[in-house]
Length: 283
Image (cartoon, rainbow, N blue to C red; front, side, top):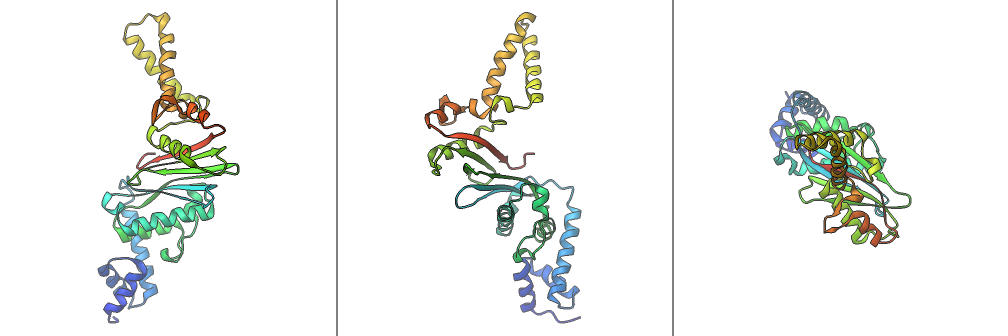
């Protein structure tokens, strides 16, 4: 077996960010050959990923990156098992690299992103294999769980990340004349804080309305309301439901006396064309 020097171990450590003890073992298993040691560590990472496949990974970070002109933005959720690893520099570098790759490749699906190749910092591996490698390095299950890409040809994409990187949003706006201004940030914050599920009432999934109506109908019946007025009560209470889940109907978080639709009307020609919201660990 070749003698493994501290200098060689450090060189492998610098290339892989793996712990010194693991680097030394990899070199011992590879007769001091750096490339073989890297491959050994990669296989160890894959094995570690397989062992931890059933673990829950609900911690992590949400990362947003945008083009300088705010015409294209990507939001990615990368997960790990503990908040301790979520604050690890290596993990955060990995999450940011994935987001930058998604922006660069305009990956609109998770499948496309997982097959795209990262740079030399991550051995030019596809994201799916780099995830296995990072699992080996960090000792926890790592997963890229969600991706949202919004591109605008006639407006801008505004983003908001709540401190801690566990809650974030993207909003596609038109009519801002290239200037995002306060209105853009306010709407992005509204989406993050108030958690709308649709832009308009027409976009609320039919099954959600039916489920809510069923719950409200049962409540009205349990209250002993006459059958002839139950439906009227249900329709009235559905109005409140729409105000909770429809972005344009929601009370503005900075001024509950006006709706988001009224806020936009005051702003002139500004319109919301779409949005995306991630909260860490949600599916």
